Amino acid sequence: MNDINKTRLEWLRDKYIDWLTTRDYSPFTIKHRRSFLANFLKWCNDRSIGNPSEITREIMERYRKYVFLYKTQKGKSLARGSQQLWLVSLRAFFRWLSRQGYMMYNPTADLDLPREVKRIPRDVLSVSEVEAIFNQVDLSKPLGVRDRAILETFYSTGMRRSELEQLHVKDIDMGRGLVMIIEGKGKKDRMVPIGERALTWIEKYLTEVRSVLAANADQDDGALFLGIKGVGLSSCTITSMCQRYILAAKIGKKGSCHIFRHTLATLMLDGGADIRYVQEILGHESLKTTQIYTRVSIGKLKEVHEKTHPGAFLKRKNKRGDSF
Image (tube, rainbow, N blue to C red; front, side):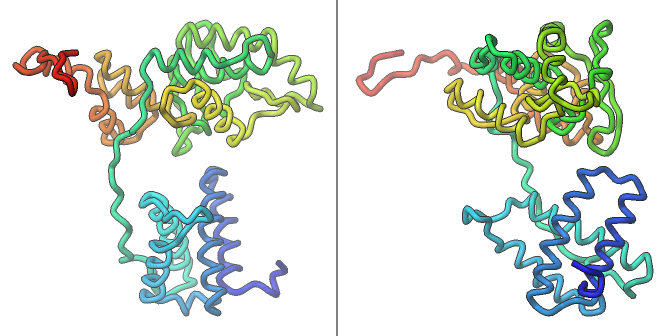
């Protein structure tokens, strides 16, 4: 769209995105803010609203209700967390407009956000379920070796999908058993440990597979995990790969990359790890975020329950009255 055909709001949106870029915001943040603002501007265009001066507190309240009632292509409502993301991006945009002098006041300053429900992870894997998933990988194929190395890395480090996507070969310290995660969430670097088994699979992948894949590209940019074209894997490819192996394992649980993150945190806490160490590994800024896993990690709770509750070892009976 030419500038002459843009509304004032669209023009300011572009200036805001440029401002985010020059302030070194992450590509992930910029991508999502652009997307959420596009939704809002389309809503405005449908109502012939094109100037910031037309945006009032009442207009924003109408848009908040629109987001609340919004249905996806599958007919589902937006989760509260998603509703928050839509509206938080707007608040940041209008805060910028008011601070830059494009508006006299911020109409989103007092906008109520949906209360986010703190849900505990529903599906967490047991050790045997993790092994069942790993066993689905066809190790006779080069891409199978790569996939096993990816799964082992997720399980051993608990890193996010976006963090694995950005890994480079140089980020793996084989000697010290560490992974350097560059510009994780919040653009913060952190060093996390990685287990010997995961390192063994990464080493096998590097030795036997990666060079073959890298030869398919014009230039090797150093990304750790490559696709068949010799370039780094996309987030969608990583997600679908994890989902495929989890479904193939037939363990009755659904999930993707993040289920290994949940599993690492839960198993470590069950094993007696200090929650602050788990926080450091996961890269959580606030301990409150990590504490959600204490509600999933019930190994110690079950142990105490079995030792102290008089009914813990009573045998259940089936419908015929037989104990089992």
